[in-house]
Image (spheres, rainbow, N blue to C red):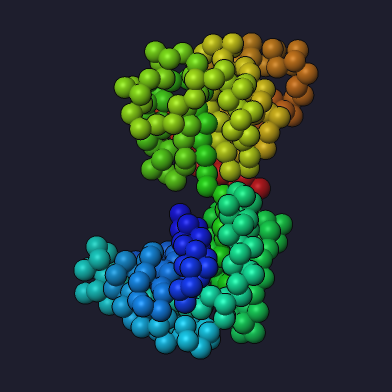
Length: 321
């Protein structure tokens, strides 16, 4: 959620401001901010982001101001006391390690430019630092598959290789502006997904029913072609109408979407399978579909079904190989 701060750092540098990027590389206990959190500081003390929720920001900024003129890296270790933690809303304290890298010095400008370009293109990328040798490089998901799958930055088992994961934002495409969607879209956003709603029926997908949501009134196949689901995309079909659901399902099965869930009973799904088979999809293709959609939590109300769908999506994202 902090990738935009790297663009900020690059923009500031290009505008002539001398900049450092501070990154949380390790945490212990109830550390206020997670591993990978970023703080961008310029040589006048202006800042964006956070590495601690406020309890050690001042100290990090002072270290950054000292590091910027030299271009040298700073590796900082802070203990967050219980009193400091309580002041920023935590029950108890912990420890954090923070790496400060001046842009154009410890952080090579060309690597920052490549990193920002990959993020902008929605390409998954890792920024890898050898903390002993102070060597830096970019890496791809094949190099750190578990970290990319779990969105988990951190220090490797060797104790000196820090891997900062920068995955494309998660997306959820929901086909069908029904009651379940009214509960599901806010849940998706709370879980870090950028939701998009597709429904060509204007009366269903109205701004009054879905205030503030991105709504596409195109036919699902056209909308799905435009959205181009990728490995960071979940798709959920909710209309019960094959004229709307089937085109979206077929487009999704041809994509790399990590999740496809379809509302409907076992009988409804059997008919769906028959139509997909006739359309040329294989058993392996059809096996990607979660149907009936959602984990079996026994819920029947729209919000309960939405919870079950959200839970299944998260489980698929985090547990898939």
